[in-house]
Image (cartoon, rainbow, N blue to C red; front, side):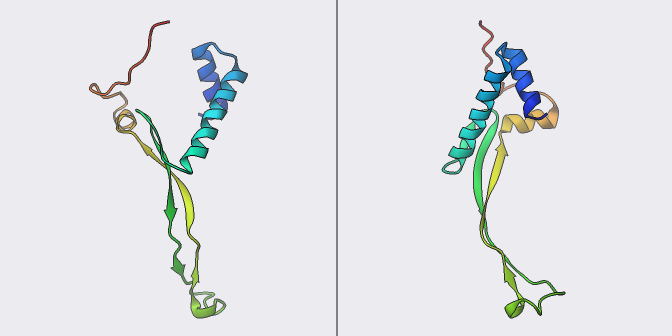
Length: 110
């Protein structure tokens, strides 16, 4: 599923126009991106978005180490995104159904 399919699914389920749903989905993802740079973002029964620092490493290429001063090179530290699925989502993907004791609440009143 891509962004367009997600927008179509939400629009058909909610009855809202697609342009409003697209704005809401884009805003949601933008907020998650911004906040997850500062602190982890946890969404109940879905997962946690955060960032991790991947330490740089030292390496050598046996074919070209004569060209590298000292025979080794290093990569810089980088910040990488990380997603940890919730226990509910892991169970859903493993067994194809929601766990009986941790079903998310769904509002059916309209």
